[in-house]
Length: 532
Image (cartoon, rainbow, N blue to C red; front, side, top):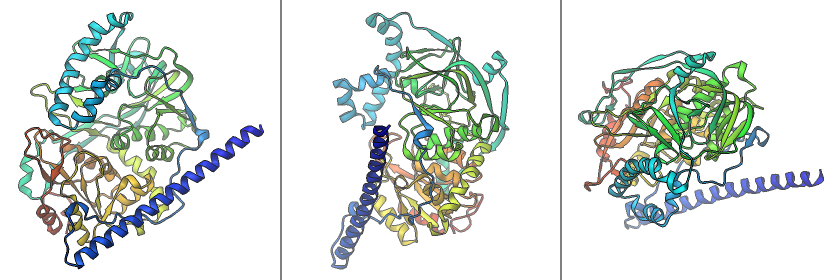
């Protein structure tokens, strides 16, 4: 007993030490930025020139407050141990010398990336069906029929709990600066209908890490918006599943032979759960919808292991204190005697199958689910004291892809107009909510951080910088905005002249377009007529 107490005390001391170290690092980083800013200001005052690439704008930092959304307590979390086996053919391929060379030297080049993707998509299923089984001397693979959420409920006569009604979403064309750039926006629909959000019960089901598919002894259940003839799943492209589109069947290439057994739980695992935007607009609204039903208040929730601390903070904000959270790694399975499945709240295909004539899906989102999530999290905004947060913000993108090549120039222009430069990845989840909720104008490059617009006020001006490329799903951000009661404007950039430019390529944004957006007073293309 004493040993256990000593270990708990040691862990507590280590966590406190790590907290202090992180705080000190953030403080030192701010000091370094201030020093660099003063150095470049002195250089300019002395008649020198500072190259654009090192001209930095000091990033805004939130006021220090102790009341924030915390991470789930250790008592709330139960971790499923990882498997020692491989968790997908793609991961195995990446560990070979060829895979390592591709990732290190070729993946960033669009031509090689597209070629590798084409080879994997077209040849891996053939290999798995006809070669792998013989090489590995495996038993014949089992193929399961795919069945939608709604069809399974009818087949199994499962009781249905309706949480939110269906909704019809009108999707206006986003405004652009200048207006002439609207010609590049190919409209996929004038409106769409999102189905109701319901909960069903499945007996003796298996939940697998990294996939929102649910496995029974006879079927594999998918959500109602999947279109396998048109869309690839992440699991397919990572070599964990093979799908026969014509027969509507699925084969699992890796199965956990010793799944954990649990009596009751609700599943919220997803291949894209680790991506902040997909989590915020597709997974978390489902969790919130399920947790809103009082009869399920004691049911544990299953999520993927290894999620970012901000994602875990968001989870803690919507589940009740004391509800058990079970984390499962990719490669493991849980067999649940009574499993609850919540229907889809948002859907964006992982990758199109690129059939000729197929229009890309830009994403569908449930307005009741997104608005309920915003209302649930509103108290966190009030607790942070939003009056100290800036009204005009520019989102700095620090990712390695889809960067604005003249970002320093854009930042200088906007800071001169009273904007604050923000790095959302350095903020807590609650601080990001408060930041977007308080802002009158949000400008930023396309990226996961912009999904926080679901917390923006309906009258806020939202301007997104995005590369002008054929096939770009411009209605992705507009569909999120419209489902949460607002609209967006685009400023289109121009990519490199390289013929191999792709959707993840960097791009240049004309500062004159930014100036035009700031000077606009009456823009009839926007429902608010904002940016005055």
